[in-house]
Length: 149
Image (cartoon, rainbow, N blue to C red):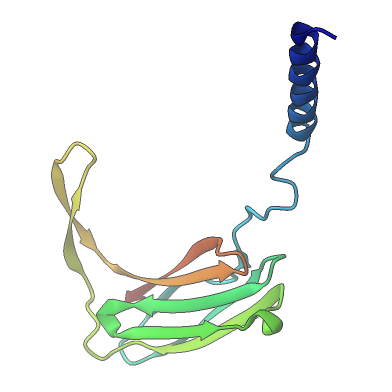
């Protein structure tokens, strides 16, 4: 066999191996889905000093690894982490939040558009966030809105 035929056979063999490896779906079995939640009530209108219950049924096939309810203006932070062996695909989250006696009724916020221009809005809803991570670090954030009357 001459050198040209050998090079051709080796090239075709390499091409066949490469093509067969490309046929596999490298993303098969990879979890790209972020946690989802069923939330019955996400908006509250309450008086100062009242207690509200934040509830969500969080689901993810790879298991819930971390949950955090946060709102910096009220110094609110509730975190829950789950070890790999304790991760459930469904978790009923519930937390009671007492609205501070000094909670604002309204305030002004400055927003910046993508073009750099700014505008001011009068805000009336406090925005509490529930951040959720699943077992493979996919993330989703759910919001709860509280208006103090």
